[in-house]
Amino acid sequence: MTVQDLAKLIDHTCLKQTATVEDIELLCDEAWQYRFKCVCVNPYFVPRAFAQLNGSNVDVCSVIDFPLGAGAFAQKLHQAEEAIEDGAKELDMVANIGLIKSGLWRLVQEDISGMRSLCSEQIILKVIIETGSLTSTEIVEACKCTQAAGADFVKTSTGFMGIGATTDAVSLLRKTVGNTMGVKAGGGIRDLTTALAMLRAGANRIGVSNSCAILSEFTQ
Image (cartoon, rainbow, N blue to C red; front, side, top):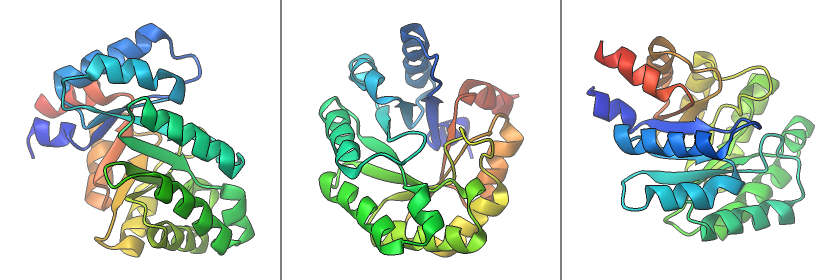
């Protein structure tokens, strides 16, 4: 793997509540410099990121109903529609974790299917299932719902619930979905060792805010 290969697996992320305009501008500058796969930002910053990265090969990803996933479905759709209109090419949607914990699998799948129906084939849809809050059985069933709904990726976590990605969770996601869809690890990945461990466990995308330091580690 080359440093550029690694960069293309990274969603360069800034989702903190205190993110400033300057933080987002720096994020985009770094993404252009290192050629990350995309930048992942909150919906408000999608137009700014899209404008700044115009002409690059870096896409813009917006989170939807982040970090709780407990919003009304119509609100999720509206947020997604605006993000796509503003230039987002990828969406990281938080699944309704309460429905997952309730075992209401048909409703979980319908929630994701509705979002998939909104997105054209050119829009990549990732679904965050918050693995740290779920049992192994719940993780497997949530993956099956995500897969059946036609999402492109299943993602471990938001990183906002105290438990981020683990290699065990990533392995279980990959084992469940096989090679039919992507697996994204996100939350608590702060160094090269952890990032590579997630990739070895089966992730083919990682979401990190410490991306530049990770690439610097790689080249040392």
